[in-house]
View 1: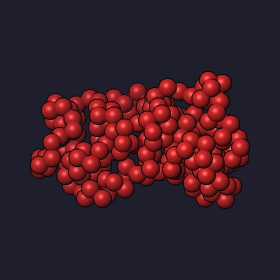
View 2 (view 1 turned 90 degrees about the vertical axis):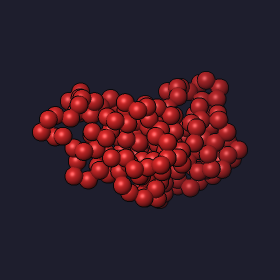
View 3 (view 1 turned 135 degrees about the vertical axis):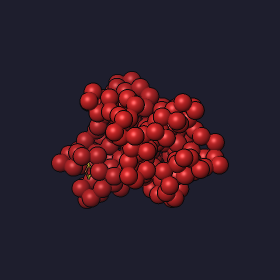
View 4 (view 1 turned 135 degrees about the horizontal axis):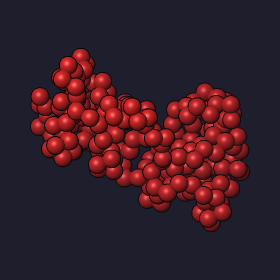
Length: 194
Ligand code: FES
């Protein structure tokens, strides 16, 4: 059972559903990623209080939850900006000049990287996004821009501002979960699982 004294970030029926789901796994931490997604969907972010609650719920330290939240860039610890830029900082992109891309974007946006945003834009560095052959690259609200140069990155920002370049509205969009997997996460645990 939940032992946290922190207020649950999810509605009671949803929290109860996660209690049942948690009981299906030998290690409660197995549910951490989808649990954090659910919290994010309900609150728009995973703040410090929710982080503490999730840690207590699955029996790990808040630092571990923080590590997960900051490793996977699809989670937000602060309210989302309208345009979210994520620049890959992993090895291929780093070798191909990711740092210069970040500097150019900081200058263009008037923002410091990895320090939140201004509501309109946010800029952060993330781990590999699987487009290493087109390094350096960045993602804006779920759309990839590849083989960047500092000037190309600046021009992309200008084009988005002026409506010459389109990116998805709001949060990053991800491919839908295959129906068989989605079902396994939304249906009640089977008898033999519980
Ligand atoms: S290292 Fe940047 S996309 Fe893989």
